[in-house]
Length: 266
Ligand SMILES: [Zn+2]
Image 1 (cartoon, rainbow, N blue to C red):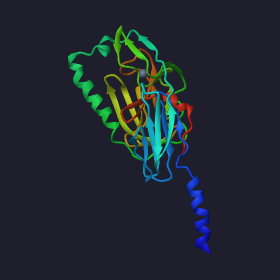
Image 2 (cartoon, rainbow, N blue to C red; image 1 turned 45 degrees about the vertical axis):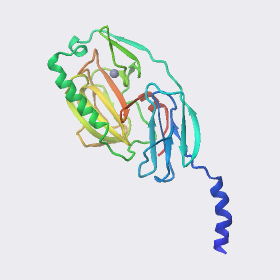
Image 3 (tube, rainbow, N blue to C red; image 1 turned 180 degrees about the vertical axis):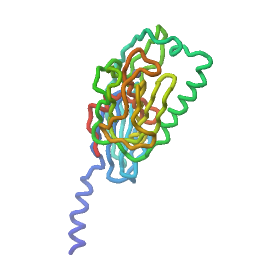
Image 4 (cartoon, helix red, strand yellow; image 1 turned 135 degrees about the vertical axis):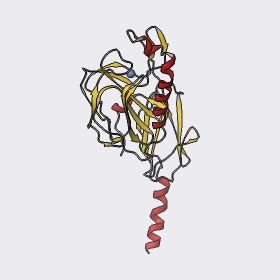
């Protein structure tokens, strides 16, 4: 009797069930999406490329600054197409930087390379589990003085695009952790980013904070969303006190504003 009951009901329910979970985030350039599969054994691909799934079944994907018009997500053979919203990027002209910070001297190159190596390492050695929660908060109460993706002209010299946002606030303004994570880098004097903090939010997602005046936390420390991590300053390459907040999913630079707008699953 029990077996018959199971057989009659199990098959139709199973046929109707879709493997597609809710996907949260922004299908836009600079955006990031995440969701949770029923189990880590499900196979998810984006445009045919398999995406890593955490032990808990979470997946995450970032589009980067320039991305194609649409993607196809497949989960266990079921496919859906999503359009990716494109963005136009501004040109930002910044004058008055110390010339050595725009055109470094020969003796600065070694320091720059060693800084870059340390930052690069944090993009690959983090926690595979998801540490971040449902929402992100803006780490500083201030004015957005620089946006993600803009083409930068520094002291009349074209430089790389802006990989983050700038939030201008008086020196000493408190900086809060935008989401849960672990502190994986603290540096007192990097050439471009000055006093620098990197938070690992898990699953390859990191936040970098640059130009700080003071740092309150230690390497390895776990931080919760909203915890004070330091103070706004203008160390490194800066014309005034502000926080540079960069977000990366492994090597892909993400727009922090896209994180702030969305609620993620848990
Ligand atoms: Zn910046």
